[in-house]
Amino acid sequence: MSAATTRSRTPDRLCAEAVDLAREAAEEAAFPGVVGEHVSAVAEGDRVVTHYFECKEPGYRGWRWAVTVARASRAKYVTLSETVLLPGTDALLAPEWVPWSERLRPGDMGPGDLLPTEADDLRLEPGFSGEDAPPPNSAVSEEMASLVEAEDAEVTAGPPASLPLVPARGSIASVAEELGMRRARVLSRYGLHGAADRWDESFGAKTPMAQAAPASCMSCGFLVPLGGSLGQAFGLCANEFGPADGRVVSLSYGCGGHSEAAVMPKPPVPSKPVIDEFLVDAMPLRPDADSGSVSVGAVSGAEDLGHS
Image 1 (cartoon, helix red, strand yellow):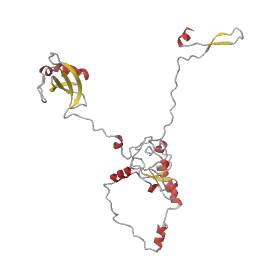
Image 2 (cartoon, rainbow, N blue to C red):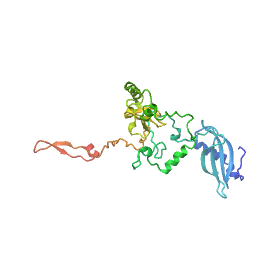
Image 3 (tube, rainbow, N blue to C red):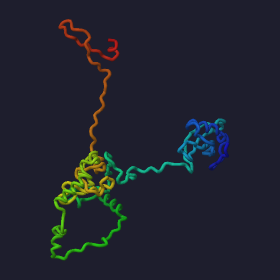
Image 4 (cartoon, rainbow, N blue to C red):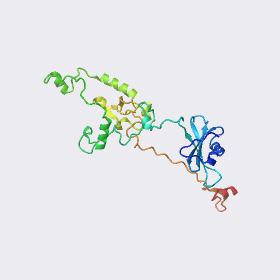
């Protein structure tokens, strides 16, 4: 027997010598040939000792079989308490479990995947406040506002390094800027149609992602509307986990990251058919003597049907 080690007390002699009993218990719990040499015997209490054996199971490097034995007061026989596989100091352990919401990265979503949003998602807020204020000025709960401030605490506030020059008051440029016409040239109808065709081909209703989506972008809270005539058919995706984050998407496009994916009703699933083995269809037994027609006799039970 290997040299026994102790924690805070001397192991009971009979319990410490019960190595064979402990090995039999470990071999019964494990597969044959995976229980190795006896490592140590540790006193867990009065007349309670745990025997440790090496584990030769592939993939369990550094693990040990722990078998606890005990002896009643004034008893001469040792009994088995429990057997368990425990990791040692150099055991090979699985990595710490990380929730799926923290493992998910942008671009991981594929066609048919759903990404439900949490009720307190900081990226979303109510589209209306119940008051006359428009959505950009709608009221947000104090709790949500504090969470947003904490989320943006590391952002350094300050003006940009360079700002565009303001045209002189009264000049043609200032009037054009006030009317939204400061640019010398804007997109023509041909340019608008070309852009619309490109965007619809990349993120439109005919893509595999949109075909498998639970709903379209038109009802998604992550859609940022566009101004101008293109805003009637396109918007900007602001879902960082979506496949089109930062891209212009068609209002008929969609993906599994829809903001309301968690509350969308599931299609009804019909129940499976039930076969009633006790219901037997009526069958003709003998012709009716009066009318010459066939009478129908009722047979109840599969056993009666077999005798008939």
